[in-house]
Length: 99
Image (cartoon, one colour):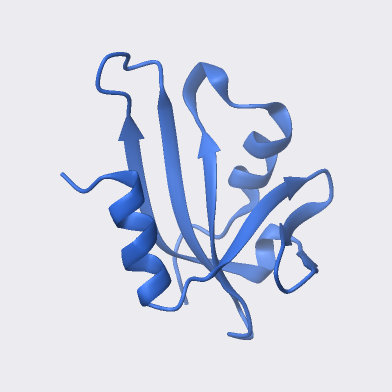
C-alpha cells in the first residue's frame, strides 16, 4: 500500500504540483491563486487513506485538474464523521467522471 507521502510525490512527478484548499465558494489553487467552482475541475485520481492505529483517521487525496488543463493539483480532505460541511458540499459538486 502506497503511503500518503509517496502518493503525493508520485502525483507531483506526474504534474499535480499545486494544492487546493476548500473555500465556501469553491476550491482555491494556492500556487495559481485561482478559485474554481468544483464543476470546473476533473478528478484524475482518488486515493483513500486510514490511520494505522485508528480507522477514524480517514483521509482522501484527490488529484484534480482544471477543465482547461491549466491547473493540476491535489486536495487532501477528511471524510466520514470528521468531514466539515464546506468540504462535504464541495465534494458532492465535483463531477463523478473525468472527461
